[in-house]
Length: 309
Ligand code: COA
Ligand code: ZN
Image (cartoon, rainbow, N blue to C red; front, side, top):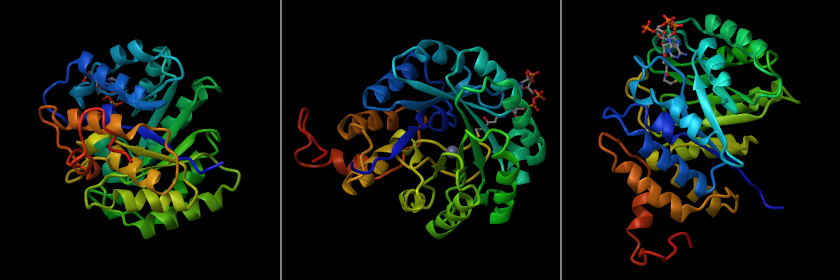
């Protein structure tokens, strides 16, 4: 059996969230459907957050209702507080991702709480969710904070010590919210975290590509055994509450890299490049990534001709 890696598509949430002009619900749903058809089983389709904080994602309940019953499909919903988590559960979300930041400044800016207050809220939420409901816990600013700079590894590990036991089967995602981390730091923190919880959770990594290190960082996480990697189609994204950060590492770049390494993603790169081009063309979108332009500019790139060879 060859190696595999699971990508989680962030475009409809992290990718669309900073885009100003409202993207019609039907357009969002069409992107979600095409991404699912390209092979994505798990897509973060939106968030249950204050519509004043993130107006673009205010139609997440409608999107969830439209796709939650698709076969073999896991729409993931981001939530910033217990209220959002309960609302998502009641709306039938099959996977809930709770977000908190390790650094106090970013957590206050993002969700108006200290990290310890958010940690307590996560503990209250998971106590109320059904035991079988898949949960993810996102550690924003695990490496670097837009306001405080480098985040001490011990701060991230201390928060893990508190929260991994709260729900031992939760997937834990360490997030480079700013895109300023370098691969040595990614590798070292995952090595220490994984060693700390030997029978531990499923680990995931979330990269932004602000300094062009998204792929290198994803590879550093992969080298430590991380097999769940977030990416956004077209490299869209950027947290509106993390000034200076650009988009997520581009899905098509990550697929290109892993497939070149012989690591299967189960995704259709040709289809993804087409979706990425459409995502990059959305009014107000700031796209990133390299593979899209490279694959589209190949002389043999004509309809029906595979670019992926
Ligand atoms: N979903 C929708 N609305 C919510 C909500 C949720 N989960 N939680 C709170 N709200 C609303 C309240 O109804 C209130 O609305 P109003 O101003 O119209 O009365 C407003 O948000 C503030 O309520 P409050 O109880 O003071 O909120 P809070 O302090 O518990 O939480 C957050 C504030 C977390 C909801 C808000 O900061 C937020 O949504 N941040 C978004 C974070 C985000 O998405 N970041 C990017 C991704 S990491
Ligand atoms: Zn992000």
